[in-house]
Length: 108
Image (cartoon, rainbow, N blue to C red; front, top):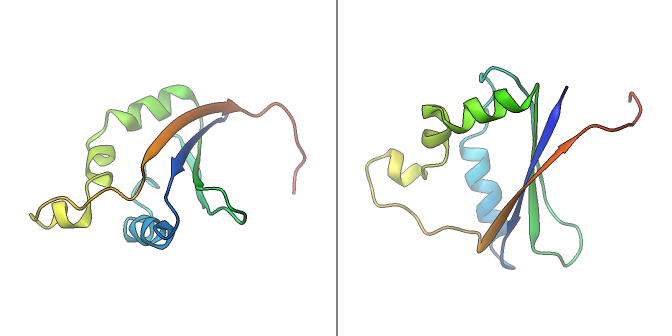
């Protein structure tokens, strides 16, 4: 059964473009992991400061396997760190991981 993992990231006003840029710089990094089904970065369209990183996985085991993989660690290093430089300052001030499974819906 597909599981949904949502990372709700609090991003102060004015920092959202940098968050989007950082995600774009590592686009596709998770794509080849077993059980990975999809990813979206959702930008708020109101005055909220929470951006949502939504990933879909075949099952909980696939998600947990990715969390403990070298590709997870590498994907969460900044571009500066990957180039051997000092880490950049985080864009977010807080994040929470939410877990869901599909309980209903419709086919597009």
